[in-house]
Image (cartoon, rainbow, N blue to C red):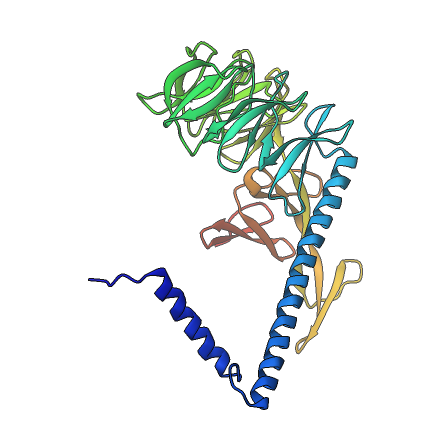
Length: 386
């Protein structure tokens, strides 16, 4: 059994230990050398402590002053945009942030780790205090919903998704739950956000994706492997694996099922087909170009024969003499997924884009890489040379 030690005995033992330690430097002895050694030690220790304390205070003061000026520069510049009246700024290390009034520079809410702005006309900003998430008003900086959620998403279409007890629920701007369909939180999903009144949701029965409306009803049946909204939220891309289709924001079908991948830009819809051909459609789903390519490049091969009108660049001189680089007859073009094919200088296609890479090994002979370490040699007609 451990023996109990009183406080008096404990501090008495510590005092004796210190007395013994300082005794090594002459403390407590009568002779003069002991006093000299003790004085030197005491002065040195005091000086060292004073210097370290001064440097510590100086470092803290410098850090505070530096952070203050860094924050003030951000405030003068308006910080990150939250609204016309509110800005967001961080300290120098970007560990903590705060929102402030752009007109007065006054800090309104501190201790913010990050913020996420709402979409559309919604005004509540999602923010984290480092542990939990809540919402504040973008127009005046006042906290509307205090941080209490482990996971929460931005407001869109008047609602925001929050995670409670492993389930996804949707709240309105007062924090009231307005939609609860028992959706289980999936950490692999990037977000639960309504776009134009619809939300991508997975079915409990088959695990596939569809779209639900604000009432929680299926607006589009759950029969797709993935559903992605375009960046401007004007279109939906639905994938069933190897095939894809495009719907507009009202769920009208724009492009029927295609065996390829879909990409959007401001003026066109691009489909990369299974055979790596790129097709371009207008925003109404009409086919504009049935064979698009990314770019064209010449093919260069080495030779030791010198022809002034065909030499591209003189290469290194080796033991066998001079080497020169010359252009082959055909060019290579790049289509979808970075696959390549051969074409003439006049733009006529010689081979489809079926190769991962192409090298010229002669004036009209080409080494074509199929992938996986396999290669074939083709001639200027695109035929395999055996």
